[in-house]
Image 1 (cartoon, rainbow, N blue to C red):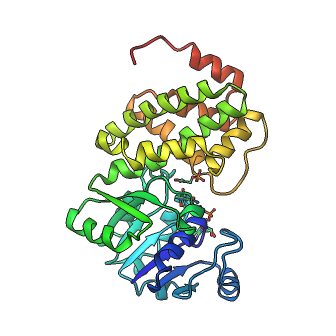
Image 2: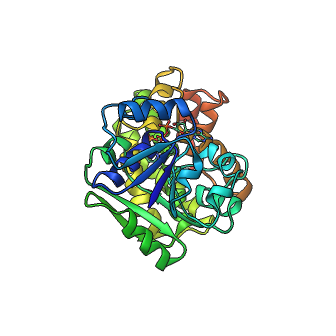
Length: 318
Ligand SMILES: NC(=O)C1=CN([C@@H]2O[C@H](COP(=O)(O)OP(=O)(O)OC[C@H]3O[C@@H](n4cnc5c(N)ncnc54)[C@H](O)[C@@H]3O)[C@@H](O)[C@H]2O)C=CC1
Ligand SMILES: O=C(CO)COP(=O)(O)O
């Protein structure tokens, strides 16, 4: 049996997709009132309105019920993951599949690393790649990366989670898979800024491409394999998130570029830009787009100054 921890848009979508054919799935939400509403309406009206919860999907606020499953997909926002696992008992000895995308501000770790640190006896894996919650919940064809350092165990998880419309590619590069998903959100902010500020689609294409170069540079120093970044978890998700207004990170970038307030909610690229700017400086590598996004978000620069600064950088080889 599978359980999903966190009933936001993505957790709900995964739970719906995995239970659609009648397989029993448990979805855990921390708020009992939200759970009561979901049970009553058979819909998560707050996060994924218009999608019916299949009959075999059980929603609960009791973590012990979710802990009945051997495989738990954890889909809470990145900055909430460490706190969630501070009570490790329900997660011990389980297969924990990280579905969050980001870098933990406190530790600089990705989601699978946070799991490994907080629940050392669990088997950690990562599910990531181009996928909007509503697409998965609607049963549209989706291809994602399932990364697990233990290949035989990863193969088992791959087959457990895949559905006819949710195709999973296996990787053993956990570091690369979790970084691709985290860093593409920062680049989606940059791409949104380019369009929001009226810099044009050519500027957006440059931001995506040079942003990809930054992603690979950072991933390299963190021990990731370059081919992972070229795959679904890196390039695939970068393309999706930098080009679609369904993305919250891209929309936040649009607002920033237009000089409007950045919308609230789960915009993972904001904290990730901050964490990665610090980590890159410590490691002595240049990540100018990431640093610009972070500085703009923190009010440390203005858009005209940021663009001028990027264009005035020394001319280098590609
Ligand atoms: N929405 C999407 O299309 C996708 C989201 N993701 C990732 O999934 C993660 C979650 O995102 P969404 O579901 O979209 O967020 P969301 O904003 O829809 O919902 C977040 C949920 O997490 C819950 N939550 C917050 N702190 C919590 C805590 N300490 N313990 C338990 N629950 C807590 C909130 O109550 C809320 O239900 C993010 O890292 C995101 O990048 C990944 C792929 C697609
Ligand atoms: O990760 C996602 C798509 O793969 C969702 O992107 P946003 O968090 O920007 O909405």
